[in-house]
Amino acid sequence: MAGLMKFTGLALRNLFSKPATQNYPVVPREYPERSRGSVQNDIDQCIFCGSCQRKCPSGAITVDRAARTWTIDRMGCVQCENCVNNCPKNCLKMDTHYSEPSAEKTVVTLHSEPPAAPEKPKFTPEQIEAMKKAAAAKKAAAAAKAEE
Amino acid sequence: MANRTIIPFGPQHPVLPEPIHLDLVLEDEKVVDAIPKIGYVHRGLEQLAEKRDFNDYLYVIERTCGICSFMHGMGYVEAMERIFDTEIPDRAKYLRTIWAEMSRVHSHLLWLGLLADAFGFEALFYQTWRLREQILDMFEESTGGRVIFSVNKIGGVLKDMPKEMLQKFVRNFDGMEKELKKLTNVFLNDYTVQSRLKGVGMLSPQDAVYLGAAGPMMRASGIKIDTRTLGYAAYSDIDFDIITSKECDCYARCDVRIQEIFQSFHIIRQAVNKIPDGEISVAVKGNPNGEAFMRVEQPRGEAIYYCRANGTKFLDRVRVRTPTFTNLMPLLHTLKGCELADVPLLILTIDPCISCTER
Image (cartoon, rainbow over all chains, first blue to last red; front, side, top):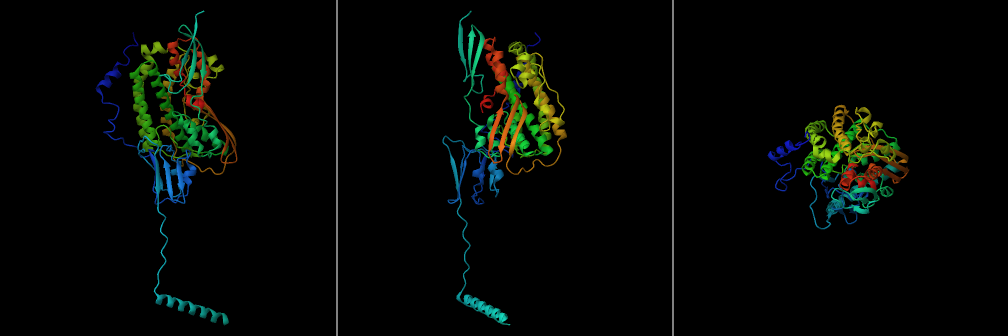
């Protein structure tokens, strides 16, 4: 029979070669650079514009501008990278690692404090008096110029 | 006349990766009729076109199927590019061709593994899927996803493949080709495998045409039709033959798919040699208005995309006709008269993708 023992060579090779699989998790998996694992947000850069929420095809992202929170449903995210590609501030990025497995639906909420309002400069009474004088002199000069 | 018995087959069956139900009408061990029932994985993806922005809908239509996801995305964006009347950069066309052929290799290797599993050759199944794993790794390296790639966009592609990466892939394919040749020897020349495949599930060329077979199912019956010859993406610049077989049985379908893998390696090498430098996408502005058809050759056969836009950002209609759907009729035809033990094998040789069929 000509067609017999066709697999024998492969089978013998497999007996004497090392396994094709990796000894995970003892040997951790190395992800390629482009791997789309999970979406991360640098929340301090975020302006809460809501672009990612509108662009998300699975509706996994919720942005609350008033409360300054950015929420992602990790189980709902499909890692399409559409939000990352449409982020105007480039604060969203795709991490190569997948999110942690969980028995329950996990929601990650990020919050940032509003930037502090610029402080009003404080002047001493003498400085205020000097400024008032300067303003009055300026006004008088302008009036004199107008009379001429 | 012998007593007739009805045996339910599926939706859960070891040979089926996805659910389809068949009522097999038997006389003794012979199948005299088969009544299919589909609808277990319908998700209403076409309807979602009315509720998602046409740019974002790409990520929905890609998820029609887990195996030819790139082809689904490509069919949709090429149809939309026809509506916009946009010419995409040449480099994007070549990148699409390379990814499409990688998808074909992936799909056919997956199918070969399932076939080996269906006739009980577990060791061969593992060997085939070990090869397939390399393709998945290459996909992850180049696109970021192993199954769903999300690299298409209307007007081009989102990610480029640098020269070093392409050359590394070609080297990988050389290695894979050597391995696959060893497996081909088992698939096509092994006595046991031949005894399960030869002369089973005959589909004559006439029946293949009348019943609307598609893809390798049709080409295995000797009909020379391949949508890639229409020249979408960069196929017009690439030299390849349509692979057919005259034997019309399961063995022929296995043979055609194996030869198509070798041909895909050949196409990828040509594309890597010819790929021009330059931009990978052009900006497409405004909302679409009009309608367009697009035909692409998926690993399983010809798929048709129809998009109709109304000038807003939501499409009126998206229709996908998938190859498995048209291959169901030839399947029912080949099932009539076969042995019960051959039914799983016959269902597998159309390479069923029920998720595609039902969307």
